[in-house]
Length: 198
Image 1 (cartoon, rainbow, N blue to C red):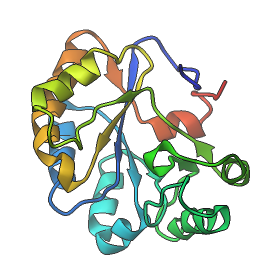
Image 2 (cartoon, helix red, strand yellow; image 1 turned 120 degrees about the horizontal axis):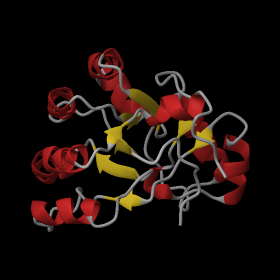
Image 3 (cartoon, helix red, strand yellow; image 1 turned 90 degrees about the vertical axis):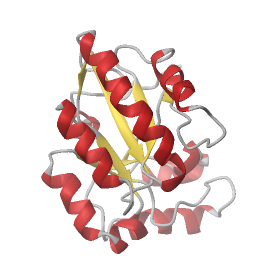
Image 4 (cartoon, helix red, strand yellow; image 1 turned 135 degrees about the vertical axis):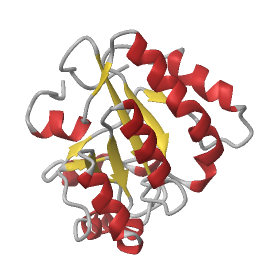
């Protein structure tokens, strides 16, 4: 199921896709600060262009950064050339060697081209926080029912996820913290070689 080796048995990797977002990023950062945990934000280049101060605040708070493309294109619906150019365009705004494809969709040739410059990171637990038909309590269950030691969990720093995220995130952090897990910066563990692809 997983494609990554993990640095320790008590580590969980918390990640946020799609930001920075004017109405949510600061809330996420406040929750992470209160709970004293680190995360990695896979940012969209166009959003960093729009909200550079939020991007810098993420870095200032000691969280990791990843490239999530410039305009969040679907890798199965976009030509390889256009897709790769979009990812490279995001490099103007996002300083990271870590890339997560939007929707987790990436064609084989695009992967081969991007692997020359990036560590490509997916996940094993999807919170589904963006699904506005879900009760926020179900988002909590989606995570604690599936995440364990070494899991990479995906939340979303976008408006669609706001209600679910604000409810679920602190409860999930409390759940794992009480059980002795630590939340670690995924970007740092990858770029320092502590987390190696199998």
